[in-house]
Structure formats: structure tokens, C-alpha cells
Length: 382
Image (cartoon, rainbow, N blue to C red; front, side, top):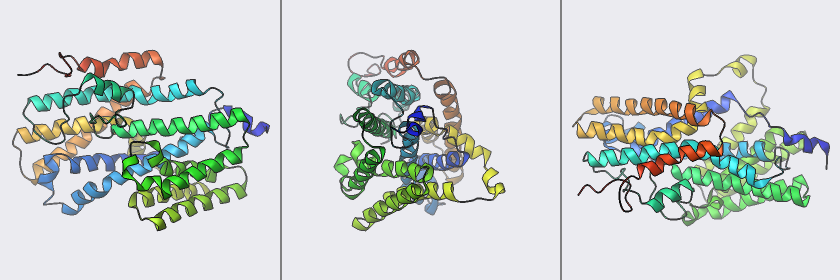
């Protein structure tokens, strides 16, 4: 086995201010989508800004494809930057990924449970309010099995965390097995491209599979291919990966046009072009610091924005605030508070090194919210 591949046991730096800014825009689009899709404030603002609210309602969710592609891009960098697994042990690497995802997730889940009960008790009767969860539901969420188990989501977007873990686990398992079996790196990578094509051409066309990684592995695989198209040592390999991801994506759109896949393909190609283009020095150095700030905290903001927005929506509705301007201010307030809450969540759950003892402490949050008798999370109010 070439020494140049074995030395990839060292971490690969993937911090990129441009990618942080793209993540920030995608995160803000998802926050806007949930504000437009759920909650009475957007209904009040819609007559004045029908195009904006309509776009966020219909297309804001497409930003998830950006995270799927970038998730694949970073997974390739972390697991197999040159087609061979960096990790010699499977379970420790998978456990580390789980803890990294689950620390902020558990804290945000606890807040979502509490906020849902607060607004329900206050009389906010709306479809965005989740039913009082059972013990089984809480445990399924903590185990990232809620979608597979058919449980109602306790917060918008938590399905993505489960899918991300499935995708990362599949990639990690595949390259770990290939390393143990001595599979040639190009063969291992070719299987990734084949599975990506299978997902985009078949599995992704069946909505019943959307609780499984196979449904999303197409977008994720495009991101992995984008990494190899950007970072492979040989120019011929970079060109080959670029052509492969373009062909796989275009064939998928010819088979059946799906806007979400078009977004994923465009994102993957953008990453490749950005890596290969010779940008002027001024362009390379420019970046919007506020967007970079949001991008670095995008995961925590993504997790916590819905309970924050739900609380603001409920407050404005219960106070009887009507009119475009007041509710427009309410939507801006919800976004601002989501950014602030996400920053705090990032500071206390993502910045410190993820460890199992820290996870054991944070997982008590959702369990502590389940403080009532029976199966309910809160005492029965009747």
C-alpha cells in the first residue's frame, strides 16, 4: 500500500470561509422556510410580500441539499480523502461522530420539548406544536431512530440529524471494510460513485424511502465526489471525478427532473469550480464576516431555531398582534433570537471537545423534560 495513502491518518483541514458563507446562506434559508411554512406571523406578512414568503415556503427547504452535499464533501475529507480509510477502528470513530452530533442535538431537543408544552399550555393551538411525547419517543429521538420508528418529530429538522448519522456511518463502514480487505482505493471510490448513481436514478424517486440513508446518499455521494474532484493529487483523476459527478447528476435529471437534485448537482459543481478557478487575490481574501460567523454555528442554529421561532410565533399570536409590520418585526426577531440561541448552543456544546461523559450529562436534558407521570413528558393538566 503506497505510503502516500497511509499517511492520511493525520486530519485534513477543511475550514474554508467560502464554504462557511454558503452554509450560512443555506441555514438562513431553512430558518426562513420554517418561519414561512409554520406559524401565523408569515400568514400576516404574506399579503405584503407574497413573492418572498411564497419562495421561502416552496423552495427554502431545498437548502437542505447544500448541507447534504457539504456533508459528503467533509465526510470524504475525514474518512477517505484519497480513497482509503484514515481510521483503523470503526466503533470509536462512529461513536465520536454520534457524540459530536448528539451533544447539541440533545440540548436543543430538551428546549423543544419544554417550549412545546409552554405554548400548548398557554393556548397556542397550531399544527406546528408537537404532541406531548412519550418515553419511547424521547428515547427514539436520542437514539436517532425516531424517523425509522415512525415517531412524530419533536422539532423541525431533527430528521436530518438521523440521516446524517446514517450516511456517515455507511461511508465509515464501507471504507473501514475496504481497508481491512485490502481493496484498491480506486475500486472503493468507484463503488461510492455507483451507489450515488443508484440513489439518484432509482432510490431517490421513491418517497417511501426518505427515512433511510439510501434516499439521500445521492446528494451526499455527489459531495464526496466533489472532494475527490477537488483534492485528488493527479489532474487526470480530478478531471475524471468532475466528469463523473456531472454525468451522474445530469442523467438523474433526465430520468426525472427534481429541483432538489438540480440544487445538489449545482452545489457539487460549484465546490469543484471554486477549488480549481484561479481567483484574483482580492476575491480569495474577501469574505463577509457575519456570514462566516453564522456558517461556523450553522448546525446549532439549525437545531435550535424551531423552538425559538415557535415561542415567538406563539407570543405574537396570543398577544393578538396583527398587521404586516408587527408580524414582520416578529419574524426578524425570531431570526435574531435563533442566531443568538444558536451561538450559545455552539459555545457550550460544540466548542468543547465531544466526550461520552459530556454526552451523558447533556442527554439528561430531554429526559429531565419528561417529568410527569405515565407516558407524558409533563403532568396531565386535567
